[in-house]
Length: 101
Image 1 (cartoon, rainbow, N blue to C red):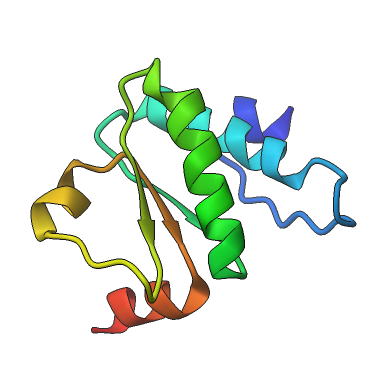
Image 2 (cartoon, helix red, strand yellow):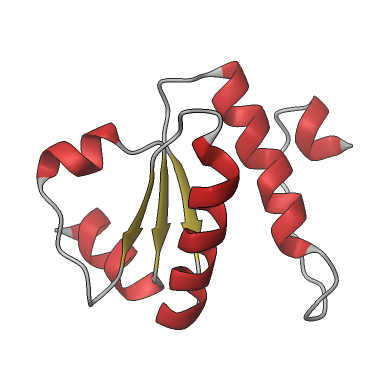
């Protein structure tokens, strides 16, 4: 409820398989519906999880016309692709490199 109906920051810690990703999807939907020009950044702890999230969200969000892009050590994108993406799925290392560099 808090993630979809307020602007409050939330720290969510829960066991594997308990629905953390669905909670993140609610926050993503709210942000994009309220401010369509903004980007969502999802940090996945491993490249394999980033790739899994990329595939699932590309299918789910395609109908909304949203572009999902993976940023990990295995990917290289043009600046235009980054600018046109609605959702960035990153590994912590790649996000650190992007935000500090």
